[in-house]
Image (cartoon, rainbow, N blue to C red; front, side):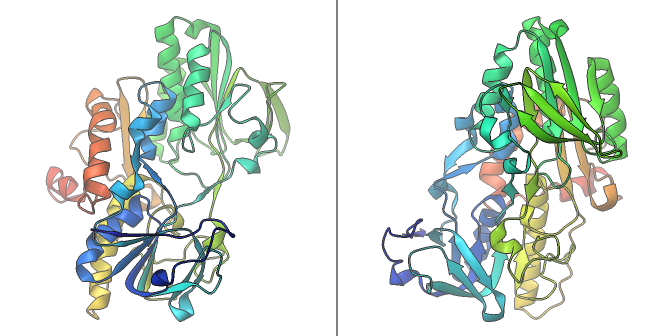
Length: 429
C-alpha cells in the first residue's frame, strides 16, 4: 500500500497537514519515469516519499504516433496513483525549493515553513518545455496549423492538422539548444510523408526539416542514413536554421541562420515545432545546479558533485547525452546500485556510459533504432546494423516498448538492454 497525502496546490486552499512534515530515508522529487523507477527499488531499504503533483502519468514517447493518427493520447495515459510505487508515501504537491546543506526539501503550499528532511535525495523532476522562447508561438500553438507533439494533449491537434492537409508547405523544426527526445521533431516529418502518400496528396505538398544542428542528426552513423532517406522521400533539410518567430494568422515562420545571423521568412500550411527546453527554475536556481542550470552530477555515478547524499536521474541531470526514456532506464540501475554502495560506505563503482536511444520512425512500418552513448559511441543492442530501417524495430517501438515502460521501467525492473547487448555482441559492446 501507499499513503497519499494531498497538499494544497495553490495558496489559499488550506494548510498543509502536519502529518507530511516528516523525515524520510529517501525523498524522490518527481514521479515521472525516473522517480517511479528509483522509488520502486528503494522501498525495501527504508521510508520513501515521492513528491509529485500530477493526477496523470504519460508514456510520452507515444505522442509521435498520436500526432500521426496511429495511437491516441488516452492510450499513453495512466492515473498517477496506478504508477506511484506501493510502499511509498505520495506527497501530491510540488517541490518549492532545496536546502541540501540541511537535507531539506520545501513543499509548495500555504505554509512556507512546511518541509521534509531526508537521508538521501533523488531529483527526478524532468525539464521545462519553453514554447515561450519562440516569439509568437505560445499565442498560436494549437491553432492556425501550428502544432507540436510535445506536451500532454498537443499531439491531438497535430493529427487534426495533418489529416486535413490536401497540399501546401509543411515545416518541421528542431531548436537551438537542449531538447527532450532529439529524434521526435523529424520522426513526425517521416510519418507525415507516409500519411500524405497514403492519402494520395503527397505530390501537392512540400516537406522541410529546419534544424539548428549542423547535420540532420547528432550521431554521424545515423545522420548519413537519415539524410539519404530524406532525399529519397523528397523532404528538404535546412541545417543551422533556428525558428525564432511565428505569426500564426499570417502563417509565417521566421528562421535565423546560425552561421550568418540573417533572418528569413517561410510561409506554411502546417508548422510542427520541436520546442526549446530548459532546466526547471526550482532546481536551476538552487545550490544543486551547475552553471547551465542542470543538477550537477558525476556523469558516471549520477551522484551530485558536491552533496554526496544527492543523486539525479533523467532529463534534469547534467549528463551530456540525449534526454530520453531509454536514458532513464539505463540510469535507474546505476543509481540504485550506487545508492546501496553509499549506504554501506563502499566505493561507487557502477558506471553509466551515457546510453540513450532514439527509435526514429521513418514511415508507418519502418524504424531506425539509434542507440549510442557518450561522445556518440555506438551501443546497439542487436547483432545487425540498426541504422537500416526495419519492420522489426518499428514493431518494438509501437507494440513492445509501451508495455515494457508500464510494467518494467517504472516498476524498477527494466534497466535498459545492457545485459542483452553484451550477450548479443559476446561482451564486446
